[in-house]
Image (cartoon, rainbow, N blue to C red; front, top):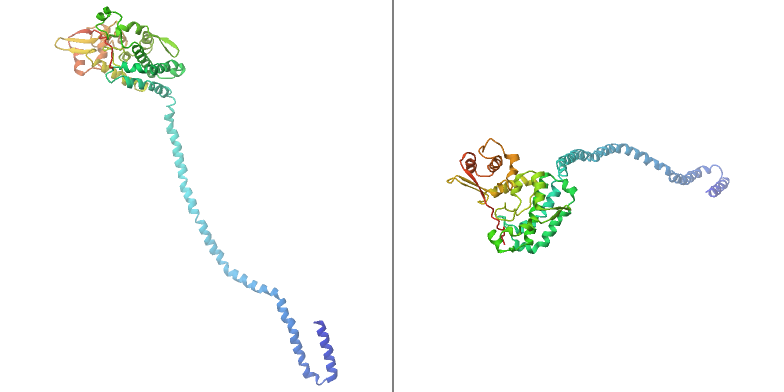
Length: 381
């Protein structure tokens, strides 16, 4: 551009020199054309005035000013994110659920009564131990108390294994049991040992004809009486006989005469066996039921009003268990014409017989006769 300008000026000077001053004026109009040529750089300058593009930028802020309400709209839109706040209230509503959890937390407080169950190690471990006796009794003793000794002979190994459980019981566990469970334990041990000794000597074989006549037949349990009285067994690694168990536990320690209606002599005059074990948690119910069952049998109790006689099992005689009732039942308000031992037995019996029989015992005139024992084996084979 500088070269062109220089050439243009030189050409203009030459032209002015040649043409003279007057004629130069009309020609001077052409320079404006040159100025128009100079405008090309001016046109270029607008291109250089790209910074003027800031002008639209200035307009955009104006638009931004108009858009500024939109942020306000956006703030309204922010209310939509604030709409999660109602869900925040839902967690607040959900807070009662933790409170409900606290209510469930109260259930552990309700479980505290269940904590009494651990205080019943006397019940659960004992119950599970008594349950071990259930199968033998259920399968080989019927509801009348008769025993299928013939079939039981085939299960002597199982019976022996069960009795070993009594021997292997930890004495510390036994001591943790309730009195009722201890009574149940010894009744079960006594009856199962009686089953064992009779089964081991079944069928009964009399040793002489004289004994057959004396004991009225071959099926009398008295033919093996010596083996029964001499039978020794271990419980918690201590040696016992039937007489020792009766003396130490049933007479001295526990002192509940109802027990004598729960233990078996393996004969028809004996209290019947139950076909279930004894349990501490229902021992009173079982002993009361046993007493009623025993007294409902003609070989245990009957009343003959016409003859003015009352017949009692020989089990109530002083030579048997009669004196065991004296301590608790020998009150003198009733049965005053009878000696203390008999008075105690009659006071006891009136709790388990019918009202008619109880009334007759209390005010009737009668004599007492004892029924001889029927020693026939309780064989239901």
